[in-house]
Structures are given as structure tokens and as C-alpha cells.
Amino acid sequence: MDYKQVKEAAQSYVDRYDQELVGAIPGFTKVVESKINTALKTGEQSVRAQIWLERDNEYYGLPSDWGGFRDVELVNQAPVSAGGCVSPPAGGMTLIYVNPEQMNGTSRKQRQRYYTVIANQIQIAPPADNQILEVVYYQTVPPLTADSDSNWLTEKHPDAYIFGLCAEICAFAKDAVGYELYRGRFVDSLMGIAQDDQVTRWSGPSLRTYTDGLVV
Image (tube, rainbow, N blue to C red; front, side, top):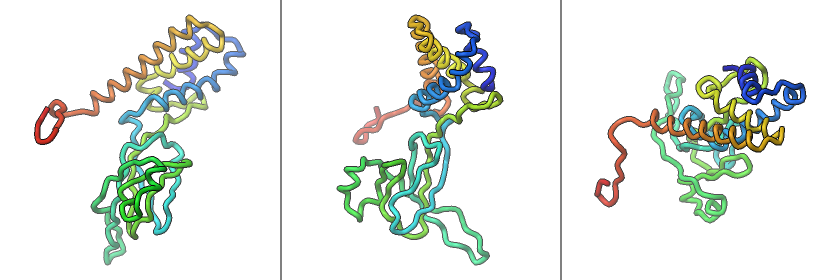
């Protein structure tokens, strides 16, 4: 579904077509997208990116659509070949998140094993030359603005947008009963997406927990 179809479906559910509501829907959509970005962290939102690091520089800006990290790895760039071609990064070390206070208390020699996020930037210790920060992060839902816009969520789970809009419209209309009804359906939709992600992302035998050599 595109944005126009999502809006039309929401209006049909609440049976409101007045101009006041039409003018308010773009704002409601931003509220719904904010709630979705807070609630959802699924495999379909995962994006891989590389940040080229510089000696003595600890802070690097986050992607504009960053919604949280899933994995942060420090990799070594392979040397340039005789033909001038750069080989893919080689090796790697997964970094561990710590809060800014813990980062301040970490010694310089150990800090390359950790990272933190502060002021829309990722902070790591000054790396050695020829290192790249390879990150997998959760991409925020691409916003809907034009009627023809769509994204992975409107294509696969349009009910999340529709019922989220319905809840905001009912809140706008001071309809407490309608708000609770559609808020519940909105939450159920988000929970269903999260559960589906867990099922589709996992393959192989049942999960097992290892503790001191024992398999639980």
C-alpha cells in the first residue's frame, strides 16, 4: 500500500473525511512513525555500513536513519595490491557497548574493545591505521510524505500504520473508546511483527543454552 491508500483506509475505519482531519494526518503520521521506530527492532530494518576511521579521532557521526546498533565490529583493511586494487577488509573484533561514564573510566590500552554513543555520535578509542568500523544498525522506517510513498512496512504490514493513525485520529477527536480500541490493535500489530521476525530470522535446531559445559 502507498501512503494515500493507508490514509484512505484509516479514514474509512473512523468514518471521518472532514478537511480538519485531512490537514492533521501528516502530523499524526509522524507520531505513528516515531512510536514504530521506538517499538520495532527487526531484521528487516538491519542495514550494514562502514565508517572509515582516522588516527586520533574518537567521534564519528551516526547515519541519519540510525535507530540503534545491532553489531559493531572493528576490521582491518587489507593492503593495496600491486595493481592498485584494495582488497576487502580482513579480520575483525566485535566491540562491546559501555555507557559514557564507563568509557571515561576505561584505560586507553583497552578502550578499542568498547564503544559508546553520545550526542548522535559513536565514540571509540583512536584506532590504528587501516581500520574500518563495520556496523549493522536498525534503520528507522523511511517516512511517508507524498501520497505515492511506500516503505517495507506499508507493503508487508500496512495494518500497523492504519491502526496507528486510527488511534491518533480518535485521540484528536476525544474519542476515548475508539482510541483504546485502535491503540490495542496497533500494539497487537507491532507485537505480531516482532514475533514474526523472531520466527523467520531463526533456522536450525532449537535454541540451547550452554553453562559451564552443560547444555540446557
